[in-house]
Length: 81
Image 1 (cartoon, one colour):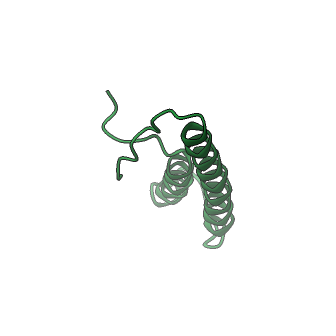
Image 2: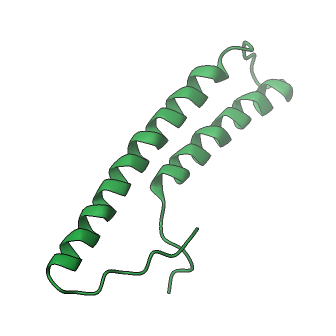
């Protein structure tokens, strides 16, 4: 049983923010040279994708609950995350 609902938008945001951390850690460790502004596009793209995916996921969940109520079925409980 899941303890919370899967939220792919947060997964994408976390992945891109971790990627930004790896880029800076590689620069700090001397593995490569990273300009200070290089992480800005990584973070912005990640947050944009997370927002789009979150909106799509929310729309799908909303549509499923409306369909379930219309068909007389009990919708799945919305477990706060």
